[in-house]
Length: 321
Image 1 (tube, helix red, strand yellow):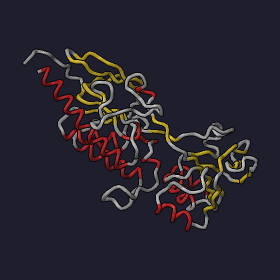
Image 2 (cartoon, rainbow, N blue to C red):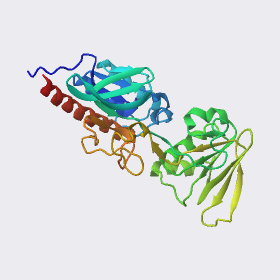
Image 3 (cartoon, rainbow, N blue to C red):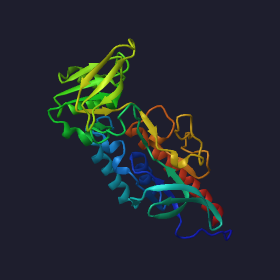
Image 4 (cartoon, rainbow, N blue to C red):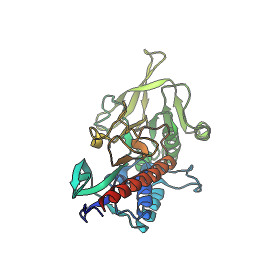
């Protein structure tokens, strides 16, 4: 008993982000009897909630992204996880009585904890072409699940060649009369089963070796101008009423820039225990540097981060009491 005290309103762990990684961390932390707060922020617009169907989560043949994430949340809350909708604006060091910790500033107030788990995910990359930004909501979309019903019996384009682009292109055929998949290479990068579905779908056409040069339209999207990367002088205007863009991710890590080390692409660098370069801060999910970003890997990261954070908190409390 050292006599060192920690204020009672201090959490053991604060989790930033309400996707699969954050909620799994919340489940494991709460079950470990850690006083844990999860700050959802923009959880309703996370990658999983914008995914129409998830077929590769073990033990669950097929389930909607929003439904699966909601299941994660309900399970975590049942073990005592406290969840708030607050949007986090800053993380900084704080003295918590006689212990060192962190303060997390939100639009609903400031909260303090001995440790923090960052699970802020990633957002879709933009093409950066003329009229993309001003046409968002007027024909430009990054979420087929959100906007596909607006394009019933209309022609649309999808940009990208990975799993998400191909899966969303197939989903769009439930509504659109035609889907043109635009890809900068001559073959898709998506998994074999998704490719097979796309090639077998009569509503999907392919624009190979092509990039979007310009989005056409004034008050709304009327088409896209594409350029052939192998024949740069070859351009084509494709009439469409909407364009769905899936060309990669940008990590949501501006919040911790200067607090923890990031790689050249802005992802948080962690070790195998999900520890960051800052003592007491851990990270998990799509915001960390890793080779595969899937729901199942985010959950694994979250479990590891919570375990490591709980051990860290126990060490701090062991010194404090």
